[in-house]
Amino acid sequence: MKPASLLRRLGSMLYDFLLVFALMCLGTIPFLIIGKGEAVPSGTLPHQMTLLAIAYAFFVGFWSRSGRTLGMQSWGLQLQQENGELPTWQQSSLRFTAAIISWVPLGLGFWWQLWDKDSLTWHDRLSKTRLIYYPKNS
Image 1 (spheres, rainbow, N blue to C red):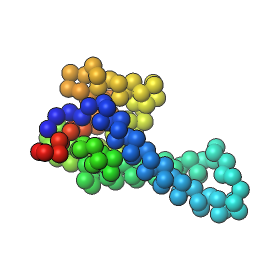
Image 2 (cartoon, one colour):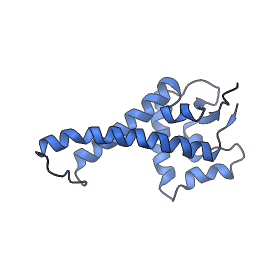
Image 3 (cartoon, rainbow, N blue to C red):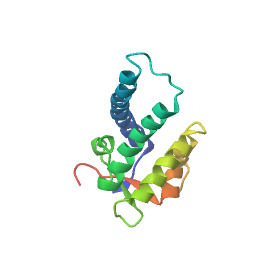
């Protein structure tokens, strides 16, 4: 059991991005039906809020229920509190919000892990959670 490397985090994020993107495509279908097949304007607040809700439900749901998304499971990663327990719904919600903030300054919140003494990102620290790597043979 050791902190997840930045490469593992990025690999997991790529897997999860593909899954969330597919869910967002499905979530856009009602807007296409309402618009009678016309293109969905990207700037509409209801559509943007729906896409945000899909991402929120995906990540917070997986994190608070099992501590891992499907991408994290594929890369041997587990999210947990500092005491080793699964994160709460509140911690997962805070982590989701903080992860978005971590991306804003060119991903600095993620790169921070390379200099942090405990290999933690901004959203790890803010939510009092950590991403742990569990090798398959353990």
